[in-house]
Amino acid sequence: MIVADAFVDLRSDTVTRPTPGMREVMATAEVGDDVYGEDPTVNALEAEVAALFGHEAALFAPSGSMANQIALQLLVSPGNELLCDADAHVVTYEIGAAAAYGGISSRTWPAVGADIDPETVAGMIRPDGYFAVPTRAIAVEQTHNRGGGGVIPLATLRELRRVADEAGVALHCDGARIWHAHVADAVPLVEYGQLFDTLSVCLSKGLGAPVGSLVVGSAEKIERARLIRKRMGGGMRQAGILAAAGRYALAHHVDRLAEDHARAARLAEAVAPFGVLAAPVRTNLVPLDLSKHALDARALAAAARAEGVLISVLGPRTARLVTHLDLDDAGVTRAASVLARLLAA
Image 1: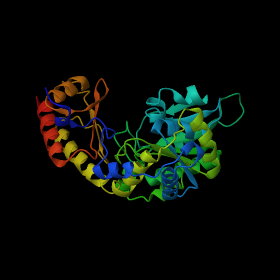
Image 2 (image 1 turned 135 degrees about the vertical axis):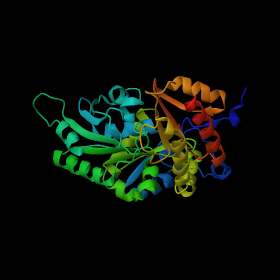
Image 3 (image 1 turned 30 degrees about the vertical axis):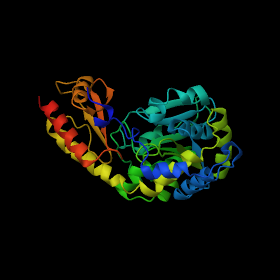
């Protein structure tokens, strides 16, 4: 049997553990009661993230799903509509929360990952009247998880901003991995920020913090967001211990994402000869399409696990490899060798 620490874990960038430096700042963090707004480390994190994206305020939340759902409730009132793509995290992996918590109706355009056509989105927007559900917001995902870590081009986002403004609807960014887009395309975070009414940004994926995401927006929106967070059970007390990890991650783990991108490219190169690479690899996600391979996703995952490599199964013929903070070059070499041998068999 292979012990846990001996596995090369490519399932997700959420599997990372705090570094020694991160643990140290967590242990020594100055804290207070955040529900009262009295945790200085949380307050500092919120101010720092808001400034990074050029917005007035931000709110620390326990998870990316909660941050997304808070933002959507800020933009879309019950009985109104959100537009997003069919593979978006907000309608795929958040367990129907938009409908269950926000009373939000969702409608989707066909999944195209980062290759969004703004005119297609524009044609879907429903105005008030006509006894139809009116569209109130559009949501996009940067980078796109099920789109293989694809980066939505800045020009596309600007066009979506134009579409939203002309229609009088809001624009939300699920920016769980926006740090990867920032590093891959060298787009300043503030330039992304100015395009959106709200953003959610995650600290516990590529940046390696153990917990936490933030909602980013105007001061008025974030004041309302505090009430929504409390209603959803997200009010935390001495949360500065967690916020300290996030601040450390922002200071030390953003630029190093380029290393994860390079390692993902190495994995992509290893599996590409077998016709299973589902999309070009831009960031830290390597999508696999096994529809024309003898192995299905579960069979590949089981065979890889038996040799000490963990991969994520997303569907019967769809799998994913993810590079991250806890994966080094030796791990990539080992995983590439195992996967290439299994795919060649």
